[in-house]
Image (tube, rainbow, N blue to C red):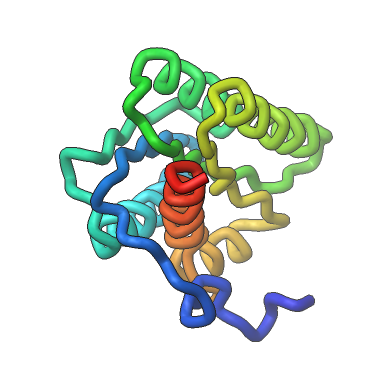
Length: 163
């Protein structure tokens, strides 16, 4: 596995624009709260560390990962001033096909919301085999997917503004 030995949240190879001119929404799933809370903390800290003012960040909880799409849709339909939305969630494989249906629906839904509004809507959803893999990617040995999602949001907001 390519991620076994590396921290995925290393951005030393890329330039991250200053986020001071942008407004972000963070939609975070409450299900698997230990993991999603860590993702949220990572994303929030990364936005703040890259120049985004606290008042330019709107954070909203939704019950689970499936509701991330609806949360992003509602936010963008009511707030045209948002430059990018970060969707944070965690779906852990279980004994049924529920995992497959949820992951597929969320991935497609997030993509479709971004296309509908011509705004970056970032997929910061962990889809792991077990809790340990989720912990490893929510501030553990593989970094924090929340950090990655925030960097992606800043880069895509800047891309959109400069196209």
